[in-house]
Image (cartoon, rainbow, N blue to C red):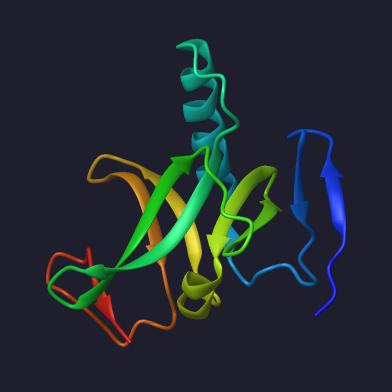
Length: 134
C-alpha cells in the first residue's frame, strides 16, 4: 500500500495520508465540544497539538469499551490521522476494525451531558451502556 507524506497546514505536523476517509461520523455538536475543550486547554497553557483519539479497548462487563481522549501523541506505525467535521481525529488501525459506521455525538440536555458513541457493530451492551460485545 502506497501512501504519501503530506503537511497539514492547520496542525503543522507530517503524517501518512490515508487512502480513504474512515466510516466514522463526528457530529457537529461533538466537534464543537471538542474544539471548546481544546481551546480551554490552550488557555491553560497546553502547548502540544491535541487530537481527538477514538478507540476501542478491552474492558467493561461486556468485553469492549469505546474510549475518547484528547491526545498529543501519535504512533506513526499504528495511528491514522483524519480531519472529520473540522477537528483532528486519531484512530489506531486495530480500533478501526470495530468502529466502522460509528457516530460520536455530544449530548447536552436535562437528563444527560457528555459524549456518546453509537456503534452499529455492537451485538449487545451492558446494562449501564458503557461496554459492548461484538
